[in-house]
Structures are given as C-alpha cells and as structure tokens.
Image 1: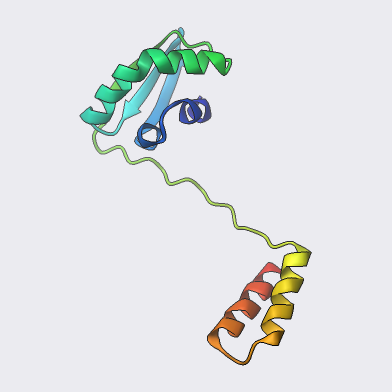
Image 2: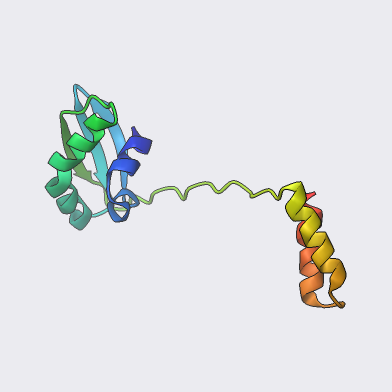
Length: 113
C-alpha cells in the first residue's frame, strides 16, 4: 500500500507520510506534522479515487499526526556500468595526461569491473 500511496499522492506530501494500515476499506496514514495532515485530509477524496484506479480497495483515508515521525530514506541501489561504458571510460582515461580526472576515471572503471 505504501508504494501505491506514494504514486498517488503529490511528492511533497508522500515524503512526509507513511501508510500505517488498511482496515475495512479505510487507509490509515501517518503524517509528520499538522500541516501535512491538513493538506492530506483536503486531498483525501481525490486520493481515494486515484488509489481505487490503481486497484486498491480503499473507501476512505484516516490521517494521524505522528510528531517526530521521520521517514526512512529510500535505499539507493548502486549503479552499474555496462561493458561499453567501462571500455569508453578506459579509452578516455588512457588518452588523458596524468591528472586527478584520469585517476578518478580509472577508479570508477575498476570499481565497475
């Protein structure tokens, strides 16, 4: 439900909220502060429709203020270079004179390989 809520809610609200649960068609959402909660309550009817369009069985949204709630930062997966990109970095770094840029490109290429 959290992923559906994040997709349906505006980004500035979604980052300050978390889904607590869904019970009997009522989605319970925790807001970081009263301002976010007020805006969320205002947008609740629209969000219900958006969630229903995504296939969620939601009839209403209940908002709770949880002061001190800090959302967990999203996990970032390490990016990987393709073989073509790695070869291009190697070729480019080989064409450079000895410099911090050349060393940085070589490090990136080594880590990716």
